[in-house]
Amino acid sequence: MKKNIAVVTGGYSGEAVISLQSAEQVMKHLDAGKYNCYKIIISKEKWVLSQEGKELQIDKNDFSATIGGEKIKFDCVFMALHGTPGEDGKLQGYFDMIGMPYTCCGVTVSSLTFNKAFTVATLARLGVNTAQSVVVNRNDKSTADDILSKVYLPCFVKPNEGGSSLGTSKVKHKEELMPAVQKALKEGEEVIIEEFIEGTELTCGVVRYNGKVKALAISEVVCAKEVFDFEAKYIDKSTEEITPARIPLSTEAECKNLSEYIYKSLGCRGMIRIDYILKKNKLYLLEVNSIPGLTERSFVPQQAEYAGISRKELYDNAIEDALSGN
Image (cartoon, rainbow, N blue to C red; front, side, top):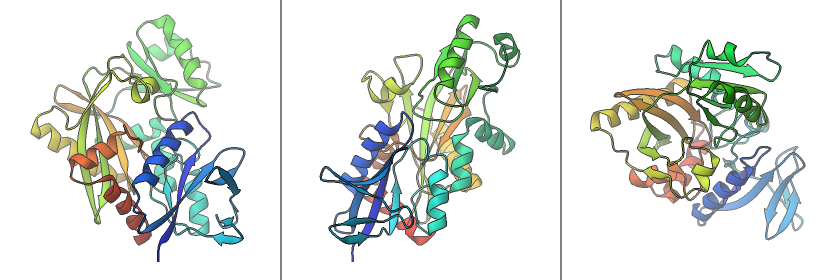
């Protein structure tokens, strides 16, 4: 009998548009012979099952929907919701309470990795190289001089919680700093200011495949703009995404081993993506993405295909892994 899969998408942030694209790709590639797929769109206003142009309300008591008088219950959630409330662990807490399996990291890991400062602090204690940084919140009275006493120019200013590089700026001059902080605060309550590390930007997807933690491949980002921001990621076609990355085999092995170490150390589940800067043969962690993009252009599907895993196999594996309780 086919399993009913709820592909959860949408969300409360500017990443909702990317979440919808990820959901489309997941539903396109999931095995129709094994799964009945339903798109569930979550917003601040409503939770609905979207089908053939119609919207049906989700019963939040048991996360079900009624179609033509028949109550549809789901066997598993495929999480394709970037940003809050999916990537920060809020929905995972709800699904845990009702006993619903899902294809991503749990509450604790999602909440931790959504907060860039907490992620950096945790992984630094585990011996991972990280950039020097400082956090400023909305009520903080810090001045540009206060911040620059801890982090030197040039630096990156970005929301401490969030993704797709929304609200991110590269700051080269002191007078640009506080406007960049205000820009980032439009996306959240806290801002992280990080030292700029000049080097090669790399990203590595990691999954649990056939029961074993596996780094898929490493991609190299060559961005025509100074910041690999939302536009560069999803709109600007001049950005090069090179898989596999043009790095020595020894560096590739080190990056894969480190990525698998981080996955295991944090207790991750499902698919994640870890971003790095490589400077003088030394890897510096940027961030951990607990629900990476799955759009046509996204890194993890590209990396899986390079590793010999089709999108159909990748998404099927995610569901089977979630249902197994790993």
